[in-house]
Image (tube, rainbow, N blue to C red; front, top):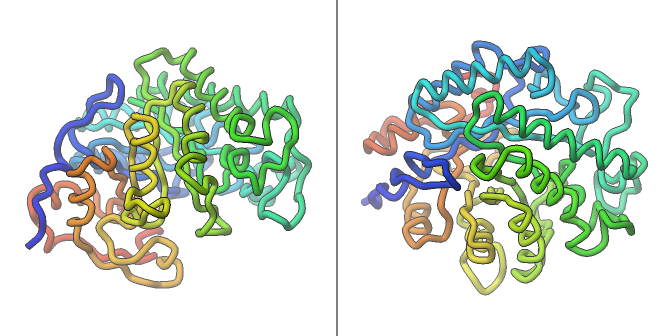
Length: 368
């Protein structure tokens, strides 16, 4: 018999933001925003998740500039007047449906493909010009002026997120993208104040958070997504020990972050030897901040297998409930299950598990 799921449907607060339950829609790139502007179809897509009972919706990655951040066609930005107006409509519709939503601010950094961008002549940005460790730089390291520009663009994007009517903002600091290229010592080989030890490698993110907090005030929640694993290495570890993990997180907490969103492929896997806490569990223990976990929730297979044609079937939530009941982490982000089924949360809440759907890569081409 499955465990009762009430813990998933209890309220939770991030700062002054009260969420009606613990279920978060994970950020997922959809590439349906033609001209980088979210249209009516994107608006309706997010509204359906609010109507379906999701506690917090985090948007697909949203670019903070229209030059170095953008290397994936039809990904939205929060820079142009048209994009800002499109997002205002999304925020209004989600709120009208009783939902809470934030934008995830995403700079593609070294994983930007210039050839697919609007500015193929502009080199991509990263801490040291590296995309893959030990393969040599593809571009010059970012200059001081470029780092300053990137920081201010993230801040401006977060301010625009608040002005558009959203409930919070998330900085994408995971998965080898721009901010994460500074975190990881394999891709940050700098010897100036932006590199070296954890104080240097977290400086850019901490500065983004600190300046944003000054602009948006104390009551607008800020979240940062981080990950141990990297695009080219699922076994990578930014932090080898809990002590290093604390050195990574503490500057971000001190700068004013409200919550940590800890990405991993499978939410039940321990982060470090000697404990069954996952990354979000350790982040909560070390910082005292609210945490969001994620990874293969409610499905039998993990997301990379989808691209190889694997079909994931609905899976038990018992392990998730157990971890949340003992207080390991506070919120759980659901990706693929919610991508194809806007009613997933309501079906789980009401015990309609026989209606839960399989997931295949065909779902990636549709805005359900």
